[in-house]
Image (cartoon, rainbow, N blue to C red; front, top):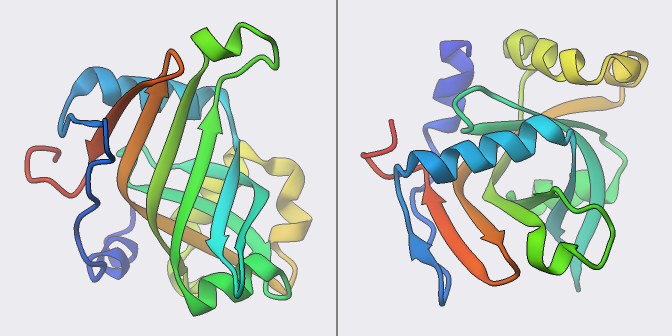
Length: 178
Protein backbone atom coordinates (compact mmCIF):
# COMPACT_ATOMS: atom_id res chain seq x y z
CA UNK A 1 0.00 0.00 0.00
CA UNK A 2 1.13 3.54 -0.75
CA UNK A 3 2.99 4.94 2.29
CA UNK A 4 1.06 8.21 2.08
CA UNK A 5 -2.21 6.27 2.39
CA UNK A 6 -0.81 4.34 5.33
CA UNK A 7 0.14 7.59 7.03
CA UNK A 8 -3.46 8.80 6.66
CA UNK A 9 -4.57 6.00 8.94
CA UNK A 10 -1.81 6.35 11.57
CA UNK A 11 -3.76 9.11 13.31
CA UNK A 12 -6.60 6.87 14.50
CA UNK A 13 -6.77 6.17 18.20
CA UNK A 14 -5.90 2.62 19.20
CA UNK A 15 -7.85 -0.06 20.93
CA UNK A 16 -11.04 -2.04 20.91
CA UNK A 17 -12.18 -3.83 24.04
CA UNK A 18 -12.75 -7.54 24.10
CA UNK A 19 -16.45 -8.33 24.04
CA UNK A 20 -18.04 -10.08 27.01
CA UNK A 21 -17.45 -13.77 26.49
CA UNK A 22 -14.89 -13.10 23.76
CA UNK A 23 -11.34 -14.35 23.87
CA UNK A 24 -8.51 -11.96 23.04
CA UNK A 25 -6.39 -13.67 20.38
CA UNK A 26 -4.07 -10.93 19.20
CA UNK A 27 -1.68 -12.24 16.60
CA UNK A 28 -3.35 -15.67 16.33
CA UNK A 29 -2.63 -16.84 12.78
CA UNK A 30 -5.52 -19.33 12.66
CA UNK A 31 -8.01 -16.55 13.42
CA UNK A 32 -6.25 -14.30 10.91
CA UNK A 33 -6.52 -17.08 8.32
CA UNK A 34 -10.24 -17.45 9.03
CA UNK A 35 -10.73 -13.70 8.52
CA UNK A 36 -8.72 -13.85 5.30
CA UNK A 37 -10.73 -16.82 3.97
CA UNK A 38 -14.08 -15.15 4.65
CA UNK A 39 -12.99 -11.95 2.89
CA UNK A 40 -11.58 -13.88 -0.06
CA UNK A 41 -14.88 -15.73 -0.48
CA UNK A 42 -17.11 -12.65 -0.09
CA UNK A 43 -16.78 -9.21 -1.60
CA UNK A 44 -19.91 -7.63 -0.12
CA UNK A 45 -20.38 -6.56 3.50
CA UNK A 46 -23.02 -5.02 5.71
CA UNK A 47 -21.74 -1.60 6.73
CA UNK A 48 -23.14 -0.12 9.92
CA UNK A 49 -22.81 3.59 10.64
CA UNK A 50 -24.06 5.83 13.45
CA UNK A 51 -27.23 7.55 12.34
CA UNK A 52 -28.85 10.53 13.99
CA UNK A 53 -31.42 8.45 15.85
CA UNK A 54 -30.62 4.84 14.97
CA UNK A 55 -27.75 2.80 13.55
CA UNK A 56 -27.86 2.60 9.74
CA UNK A 57 -26.99 -0.65 7.94
CA UNK A 58 -26.47 -1.12 4.21
CA UNK A 59 -24.69 -3.39 1.75
CA UNK A 60 -21.39 -2.24 0.27
CA UNK A 61 -18.98 -3.77 -2.21
CA UNK A 62 -15.59 -4.15 -0.52
CA UNK A 63 -11.95 -4.98 -1.08
CA UNK A 64 -9.46 -5.77 1.69
CA UNK A 65 -5.72 -5.09 1.71
CA UNK A 66 -3.37 -8.06 2.08
CA UNK A 67 -2.49 -7.09 5.64
CA UNK A 68 -6.22 -6.99 6.57
CA UNK A 69 -5.78 -3.51 8.05
CA UNK A 70 -7.80 -1.58 5.46
CA UNK A 71 -11.20 -2.32 3.93
CA UNK A 72 -12.08 -0.16 0.93
CA UNK A 73 -15.53 0.70 -0.34
CA UNK A 74 -17.09 3.31 -2.57
CA UNK A 75 -20.22 5.39 -2.20
CA UNK A 76 -21.85 8.57 -3.37
CA UNK A 77 -21.49 11.75 -1.34
CA UNK A 78 -25.29 12.05 -1.31
CA UNK A 79 -25.89 8.83 0.66
CA UNK A 80 -26.93 8.48 4.26
CA UNK A 81 -23.87 6.33 4.95
CA UNK A 82 -21.55 9.10 3.76
CA UNK A 83 -23.38 11.69 5.86
CA UNK A 84 -23.23 9.43 8.91
CA UNK A 85 -19.52 8.75 8.44
CA UNK A 86 -18.87 12.47 8.07
CA UNK A 87 -20.46 12.98 11.50
CA UNK A 88 -19.00 9.90 13.21
CA UNK A 89 -16.42 7.78 11.44
CA UNK A 90 -16.70 4.72 13.72
CA UNK A 91 -18.13 1.86 11.67
CA UNK A 92 -18.51 -1.89 11.59
CA UNK A 93 -18.52 -4.19 8.58
CA UNK A 94 -20.05 -7.66 8.79
CA UNK A 95 -19.17 -10.48 6.38
CA UNK A 96 -20.22 -14.12 6.70
CA UNK A 97 -20.12 -17.43 4.90
CA UNK A 98 -23.70 -18.52 5.53
CA UNK A 99 -25.66 -20.53 3.01
CA UNK A 100 -29.08 -19.25 4.16
CA UNK A 101 -30.04 -22.62 5.55
CA UNK A 102 -30.80 -24.13 8.94
CA UNK A 103 -27.24 -25.44 9.21
CA UNK A 104 -25.95 -21.86 9.44
CA UNK A 105 -26.67 -21.78 13.16
CA UNK A 106 -24.01 -24.42 13.69
CA UNK A 107 -21.69 -24.00 10.71
CA UNK A 108 -21.58 -20.37 9.62
CA UNK A 109 -18.71 -18.06 10.50
CA UNK A 110 -19.33 -14.35 10.89
CA UNK A 111 -16.58 -11.73 10.85
CA UNK A 112 -17.21 -8.22 12.14
CA UNK A 113 -14.54 -5.60 11.45
CA UNK A 114 -14.47 -2.55 13.70
CA UNK A 115 -12.70 0.62 12.75
CA UNK A 116 -12.85 4.14 11.45
CA UNK A 117 -13.78 5.18 7.93
CA UNK A 118 -11.87 7.93 6.20
CA UNK A 119 -12.28 9.48 2.78
CA UNK A 120 -9.21 8.72 0.70
CA UNK A 121 -8.04 11.80 -1.21
CA UNK A 122 -8.04 11.30 -4.99
CA UNK A 123 -4.34 12.09 -5.28
CA UNK A 124 -3.54 9.28 -2.82
CA UNK A 125 -6.11 6.71 -3.88
CA UNK A 126 -4.63 4.95 -6.92
CA UNK A 127 -3.46 1.75 -5.21
CA UNK A 128 -6.62 1.31 -3.17
CA UNK A 129 -8.83 2.23 -6.11
CA UNK A 130 -7.07 -0.38 -8.26
CA UNK A 131 -7.54 -2.96 -5.51
CA UNK A 132 -11.24 -2.13 -5.33
CA UNK A 133 -11.69 -2.32 -9.11
CA UNK A 134 -9.86 -5.68 -9.28
CA UNK A 135 -12.69 -7.08 -7.16
CA UNK A 136 -15.48 -4.99 -8.70
CA UNK A 137 -14.68 -4.09 -12.33
CA UNK A 138 -18.42 -3.73 -13.05
CA UNK A 139 -18.45 -0.66 -10.75
CA UNK A 140 -15.88 1.30 -12.77
CA UNK A 141 -18.40 3.87 -14.08
CA UNK A 142 -19.85 4.41 -10.61
CA UNK A 143 -16.39 4.81 -9.06
CA UNK A 144 -15.42 7.36 -11.71
CA UNK A 145 -18.53 9.47 -11.14
CA UNK A 146 -17.78 12.97 -9.83
CA UNK A 147 -20.15 12.37 -6.90
CA UNK A 148 -18.42 9.12 -5.93
CA UNK A 149 -15.97 8.85 -3.05
CA UNK A 150 -13.52 6.12 -2.06
CA UNK A 151 -13.46 5.34 1.64
CA UNK A 152 -11.05 3.23 3.64
CA UNK A 153 -11.81 1.65 6.99
CA UNK A 154 -8.74 1.37 9.19
CA UNK A 155 -9.55 -1.85 11.00
CA UNK A 156 -8.83 -1.88 14.72
CA UNK A 157 -10.13 -5.37 15.42
CA UNK A 158 -12.02 -8.32 14.03
CA UNK A 159 -14.58 -10.34 15.97
CA UNK A 160 -14.96 -13.85 14.59
CA UNK A 161 -18.04 -15.82 15.64
CA UNK A 162 -18.30 -19.47 14.70
CA UNK A 163 -20.51 -22.37 15.75
CA UNK A 164 -23.14 -19.84 16.87
CA UNK A 165 -21.35 -18.77 20.07
CA UNK A 166 -17.60 -19.21 19.80
CA UNK A 167 -16.24 -15.63 19.79
CA UNK A 168 -12.61 -14.70 19.16
CA UNK A 169 -11.18 -11.18 18.86
CA UNK A 170 -8.22 -10.38 16.63
CA UNK A 171 -6.87 -6.99 17.73
CA UNK A 172 -4.78 -5.44 14.95
CA UNK A 173 -3.53 -2.55 17.10
CA UNK A 174 -1.48 -4.83 19.32
CA UNK A 175 2.29 -4.85 18.82
CA UNK A 176 2.26 -8.65 18.39
CA UNK A 177 0.27 -8.36 15.16
CA UNK A 178 2.72 -6.78 12.74
